[in-house]
Image (cartoon, rainbow, N blue to C red; front, side, top):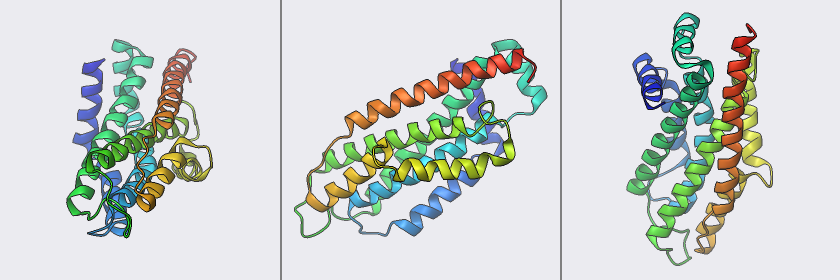
Length: 226
C-alpha cells in the first residue's frame, strides 16, 4: 500500500494537478487573513478553507490517471487498493497543506486571542488549530469521495456538488467541521481554548467509513464492467 500511495503522490505532483487547489488555498488565505490577526481567529478561517480544498484534491487523485493506466494498475494491485491509495494520497496532501497553513499563520499572526482578552497559552492554541485542521481535512476527504467516481457517476456535476456539500458541512449545526470552527472563534473571543476531541473522533469514523465504502464500490463496479 505504501508503494501505491507514493505512486499516487508522484502522479499528482508531476502532473501539476496539485497546483490549482494549492493556489486557491493561498489566495483565500491572503484574502481572509491579515498580518497581526489573532491566531485562534485566523485558525478558524484556515481550517474551514481546507475542507473544500481537500475535497478538490480527492478529485485530483481519483481522476488523475488515464483509463488505460488505471486499468493496468488495478489489474496488478486490485481496484479497491488502487482507489484507496488515491484517496489516502489526497488525505496526506491535505494534511501537509494544513500544517503548512498553520505555520504560515503563526509566522504572520499576532496575539493568540482577540483583545482585550488575555492571551491563551501558545501550545494550546497550536494544538487546537492542529486538531481543527485534521477534522476539516478528514471531512474534506469524505466530501470529495462522495462527489467523485465511483460514488458520483456523472463527473460534470462533481465540482458544483463538492462545493455545495463543503459549504453545507461547514455551516450545518452539529457538523464536526462547524463545531471546530465555532470553538476556535469562541476561544479567540474568550481565551478559553477547548480541544475538539469528539469532533475529531466523529470525523475520523465518518471518513474511514466513506473511504472504505468507496474502495469496495470501486472494485464491484470494475467487476461489473461499469
